[in-house]
Each structure stands twice: as structure tokens, then as C-alpha cells.
Length: 202
Image 1 (spheres, rainbow, N blue to C red):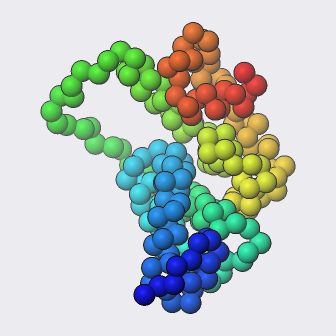
Image 2 (cartoon, rainbow, N blue to C red):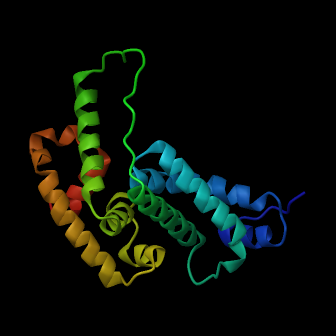
Image 3 (cartoon, rainbow, N blue to C red):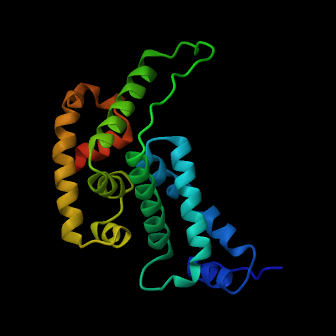
């Protein structure tokens, strides 16, 4: 039976020492945010699930390489981001055309819900237009709320590089999402879009 532990660092240590339950508990604690990062970066549920699985296998196997120079969450997020970027690069090298979806007609959706869904899709499509380095920085800083310093550690770059990538990404998003700038429509703008717009200085 595993010894109860509380901190993430203790769970990592317990895992490397052979505790069969420690890593599962660590993943359970952070899976929601890790999944959110993977999904927003990959923009596809199946690809995000695959990337997250790749990341967790890597973290499981390489837990002994963790150094307490950063938070465990920062280490985990860096692994997830890297797994996502690896899959994006492989996908770009082997582009595929998605098959049209078939199936029963979806039930009618209220107008407000449709507007919100359309806006959310517009934000996701705009993020998809960004180069992968800018998209990762925007997702981590503007959507997930990490600091520039934390994001720099996750991406393995200088803080100035993160700021530059965010600035360029926001400038491009401002053009792509210009049609969402009607203040009267803010009530229907999803949190992702509002976060990005606030970062633009609105």
C-alpha cells in the first residue's frame, strides 16, 4: 500500500522510488489543465488525446529527470506542449483531408448558443492561423493564464522571446478577430476570446 503524500514533488519522488499509485494521483490532480492546453494547442479532440497520452508516457518514463528547479506543474506542461508541437510538425509533414461527417441531423440549437459556438470556432480558427510558436505562447499566457516567466520555462526559451511571440500573435489575432470587436456582442464572446482581447488592451 502506498504511503499518503501531499505535494507534487513528493509524488514524483514516490513514483521514482517505485510507488505504483503515485503517478496516477499526480495525473489526476492536473489532468484538466493539461487536457485544456493539449486541446487548445491541437484543436482536435483525438489529436489532443494522443498528444496528452504521449506526454504522460514520457513523463512517466522520465520522472527521474525532474529537478526541483521548477514546479512539477511547469515540468508537466512543458512536456505536454512539446508533445503537441511534435504532433503538429508530423501532421504538417503528412497533411490529411478530413472526411465529411455523416449521421443523424442534430437537434435545433438556440440562437444565442449558435452565436457563442460560432464565436468560439472563430477564435479556434484564428489560433490555428498562428505559427506554432506564437500559438503555444498565446495559449499558455493569454488563455491558460500562466506568467511570461512560467511560459518561458515550459517552452524552453527566454522571457523576451515569449513576449515577442505573444505580441506578434496578438497583432495577427486582432486582425483575424476584428469582426468580434462589437462591444454589444461581448455577452456572447467565449472566455478564450475575451482573454485574448483583454491582452490586446481592450
